[in-house]
Image (cartoon, rainbow over all chains, first blue to last red; front, side, top):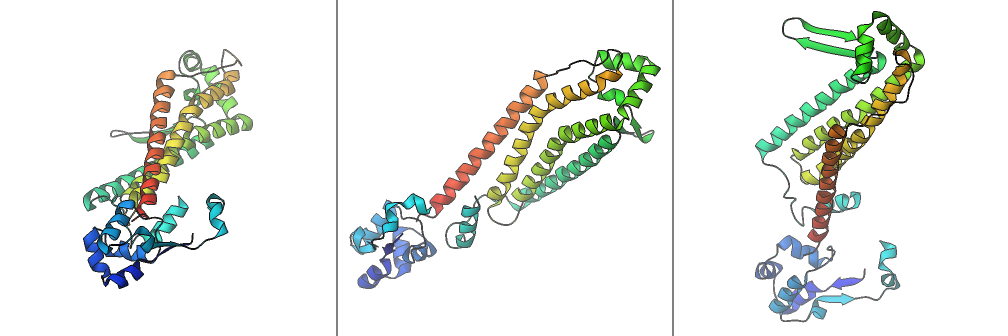
Amino acid sequence: MPVVVNLDVMLARRKVRSKELAEAIGITESNLSLLKSGKVKGVRFATLAAICRYLECEPGDVLGYEPSDDDLHPDATG
Amino acid sequence: MVYYGKKLLSNRKYIVEDGYSLPAAKARICRVAGVIFLLVGALWGAATMAQALTPGWSLSCDADQGCREGADPVVLLPTGREQASVSASPAARTRLAAYAARPGVRMGLAVLAVIDEGFLIFLFVAIGLTLRRLGSRRGAALAQALPWFKRGALSAVLWAIAQPVTDSLRGMLLFPATPSGASWYFTFDLTVAGPALLLASAAYATAWALEAGVRAERDLADFV
């Protein structure tokens, strides 16, 4: 699923450290690390909203999409 | 289940700790209880093998006379009229013993004993393994225990269904050697099979619901 997480880019732009963001939005650093590396199945709207609020950005700044035909039939690939 | 297990085991250190592990004292009690269930299952299995090899085998122990084993095929007859009529006549008793010793009859009784007790033995083993896993010190104790709980509950359901069938077949198998002669025989004691089936079904449904809950929780745990 080519949804890419650009959180590390936004953190660098805002000059915010991961630890600071994790504390500010109330998730663990390890979970934030997983989110940054894209190793999660999904992100809650509440988490995304908190990130956007703290980094003063839009969801599209944090998440990106690389088009792929595989995504038209997601169930077929399991 | 396997997918979630492997997926989460590899990621568990990063995501969430499985909160379903018991405190040390309770975990120890669970492990000990699990061993007891496994021992009972093993003893029950040994007794079933003895019953399969010797129709009507029994072992009784008391403080005064110690342990005595015996083999009386009369106890395999359905309770009531047949047992009384055979017990009352030494000739009928001898005839039943000789009939039960025939290879075909013996084999049939052995198969019925294994089917009848096999589900119960498996139930004890499954509950034992469930308790052992619940008392495990590793993470995801509940998730590891539930599949065995579910197997045990399924075994209990099958036992409740098989019991009247094996009782009926055993009766029909032995009736030719009784004074009343060969006849059809069907028995279904609703007071025994009914509650057993209800309880076993409830246990299975509980296991299924818990397993679904754990799976859903683990699925959600991948969301941050």
